[in-house]
Length: 288
Image 1 (spheres, rainbow, N blue to C red):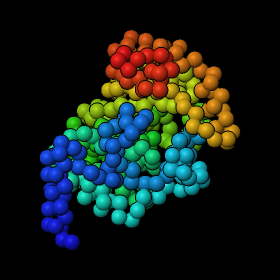
Image 2: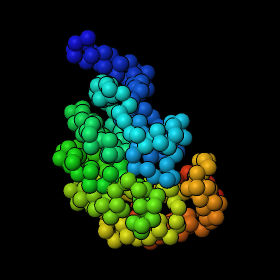
Image 3: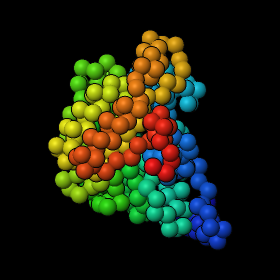
């Protein structure tokens, strides 16, 4: 099939979807459900697994992989970028304006990306088709490799990271191969100063005092546009860290933590979102 045929097919798919008032059907770029749906309307995972080795990661259970298998991050398929391009073309022709998040079940700047560079190729395609996107990564300064492309996207781009600990000794214990906390914060500050929207995911909450310290520290830096606060959800498992997480979730007074987080964020005039699991634990209604 020649390129013009592919273009015609993409146009036909987009036209049919518009007539039905629906989003075009795509598989690599998908609509997250459940908890993930709170973070993004659309997402794409170019890699299977992640080599950051986070002790709280739910990815292995979600993908039905052992932790050892999950740590061997690799491309989802040899033609994943080709498929991603086709779906971007379809969404572009359908007039899609929602942001596409990279990535949920992996990290766009996991160590495997140093070799394959699929994330850079994906951003080039997103820019080519004028699509909005969000980078969610613990890769820290590895994200700077694509600084030029992200700046090129301007208001179409958002850069986000997950922060669990301000104390880097605790970070090493739980996120051994992810970038240092201060490196991630420095990255957010760099992009924010250039007018790129930023947000931070404060989840899982393993040490409530650490999470509150992070909020105060970031507010002083003034480099975060939105704080997204969750809780800790034990996903099962019997490893030593799994059992620690189980006990921590039971021990934390989530009502108290949620109240403290909201009070602090409002006192600092921060835009924030309290995730559904924490709202439920705080006995808050969906309308609050």
